[in-house]
Image 1: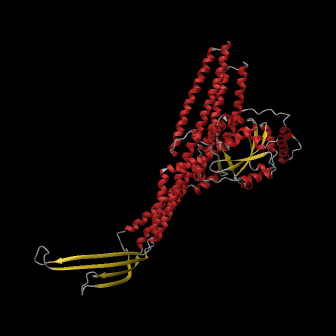
Image 2: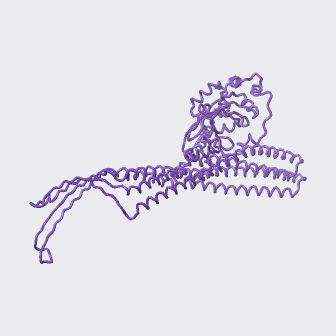
Image 3: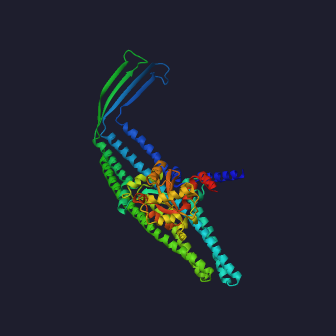
Length: 617
């Protein structure tokens, strides 16, 4: 009974954390709801719609009703109307006016309101895009500061390890008091850095709260997964931006608005022609023999402004100058957008190149630090060398973490300069497997999130295990390893067949084998699709039913992740990946630590994961 209660509590806590997740897209919807500039622009759209209704009514008939009823008393030679004649009268009139020609006023007014509406739509998109840019930057800053806080804690952990080693040496009699004081000061500095980084994280979180207007914790934030077709070159990015960026389109539509306003000024140079009809009824309520009459009239009225002191001509010239001004604004907005795109593109390219270099540099620094620790324990390296290498490692890792998020933001910023960021965050479209296979040669589709993982857990040290730890030596007795190295392997089907036989001997499903595998194993992130039917079809097509499995993940859009194989080392997994046919390599499969995907599965399927673990025990 106690065991069941414990399991229930664990599942409840897992589900609670699942419900408290806060994604980039979810937060953007809140940011839009709380952005008053966007609300004002939305309200302006409704106002312009009413202006369009007014413009549509200009050529419609107008009906006026006039009623007059009066009583009068007339006296002669007296100040007060005590005696005299008393008369009463009433008059009723209905007049109908149908415009026949208004100097093209209604035509140009309709055109003007149509262009104003289009301009307002782009203004709204522009404000949404601006909100998206600032919001995404704040969101990513929180993730950055959170990971830097984790790094600061790692620095404290390493400092404590060095402190213990020096203290032990001092206690054994071959350490120095100076070394002890130095590492003690270094440890204190590391702990201060943790407190400083906590302040930085708090400030970044408060900045994010401004946009979403709700309380949240950094643990709720999900590391975003980037799905988008990016331009292949700077020229294509500039071309897209000049066509689709709302700032440029607002300037272009405002030029059309100015042209419509200029045409409106020409209205005064044309006559107005109206068809007028009226019916008058006189003294129907107070009839008199001589005064009662009815009158029916119908005719055409023409009015023409011949001269008003040159006012209309001046207004026309002013409107022409306004057109020139809007043309200047178009050029200005194009210059600004081109510059923004170039800066965003350079940031993207430079951070992408820097990311690869930093990754391998971090590997080297980690190896150097590990070796220095071992030699320090053996007395082959002094404390200064150890501290220098440890600080170098922390600095490089800090630079790497910042670069990861700089690269992620650079991609979103590039979308923003092209005017696509808000639409991207509001969209739920993800490319399925079959579409990616067909368009692989022409598509620059890539999926990026920090450390190349799509899971949404805290970026702790275990997420870097495949980068920071040396690969395991291969076990010559391992069955899977023999299969990989076999010269008789010509394609992935024979590999899958061998893995299938092994799974059958163990009498467990591959899914169970995958989820219960040790965390230091490796696997191949094979592909993803937007439906379980396609994933099932994919496994059948490549004969992988017993060597691969798929599972669902995601909040805004449910996708199916397909994982293949369990390998003892990264090298072994890479050899298996090399054997894949081109049809599988089109999906850009990659080798990952199996613990990453185990955690991802656990995040979205906590009950199933715990049941499988209980069954294995």
